[in-house]
View 1 (tube, rainbow, N blue to C red):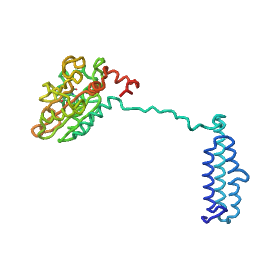
View 2 (cartoon, helix red, strand yellow):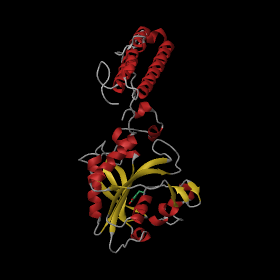
View 3 (cartoon, helix red, strand yellow):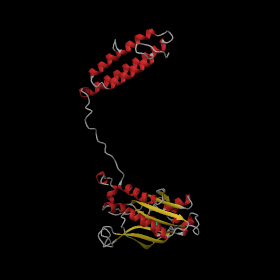
Length: 347
Ligand code: DAH
C-alpha cells in the first residue's frame, strides 16, 4: 500500500495528508468571506484538489481501493466541517472581523504581581543566614502549649503563658505566639550539629495601632553543637546586622531575660537616622532594639533529650515588620496588611 501513486508522487495517503495540511493553513489565514470561498473552491470545488485525488482512486488496485477510499472520505468530511465552522465564526463576528484584524495594534498590558515587602525582607534576611551555613526550618502556626511554652522553659503559670496573651483554639492548643516553637520541633527531629533559621507568622491578641498587629512575622535562629559559645552568637548577629542594615552599623548587647536562654541579651543598633544622638524614630534613646538572644537554656536541651553537658547552643529571634519598616521608611504597620496595591507596588 506504500508504493507511489498519482501525478505528484507519494502514496495516496501522503497526498491526502498534505492536502489536509495545506487546507488547514490556508483556512487559518482566510479572514474574509471572499477568502473563505476561495479556499472552498480550491480544495472542495468540483474541480478542486480533493476531487482530483478522488478521481485517481480509480487507478488503484482492488485490494488498495477500499482503505484509500475510506481515508479520502474522512478527509472530505473533515474539510467540510472545518469550512462550516469557519463560516459560522465569520458570520458571528460580523463585518468588523470580516474586514480583517489589525495585528499591529498594541496588546492588552498584563500587570505583573510582586513579592510583598514583608516577604522580600524575609527572603533577604534568610539569604544572609543561608550564606552563613544556616538551613531553613518551619513549624505549625496552630501549636500546642508544650512547644510554645513548657519545652521552652516557660511554665504555664508564667505571665507569657497567660491565657489572655494567646489566641486559643482549644484547651492547650493555641496560635503560636513566637517562632521559638520551631527550635523545639527542629531539636525533636534532629540531633546536633544544628544550624537553622525559621521565618514565620505569629499571633498575639494585641490592640492594633501604628506599631502593633495581632499577627506579625518573626525570624528565629538556632545553633547547637559542641563548643558553641556566646562569641559565636555575637559574631553571627553582628554579621547579620552589618549585612542587612549597613556595614557601619554599631551594635551593643544588653543583658536581658528570656526563659529559654541563659544568659540572655537584647541586641541594639545605634539609630541609623540620628547616628545615636536621639531622634523621633529611636524615641530619643539613640539605640534601636533589634532582637532577643542568648545561650540555649540547659532545660530546653533536656526537654528534647539533648545532653547539655556535651552540647551548647545559641538562639535568637526578632520581628520582621520593624526592620522592614525601618529600611523602607514605613511609619504605620497597618499599611503592610491592608493590601492596597498602590502602596505595595512601591517596594
Ligand atoms: N521569642 C522571643 C519573642 O517573641 C524572641 C526571642 C528572644 C527568641 C530570645 C529567641 C531568644 O530565640 O533567644 O519575644
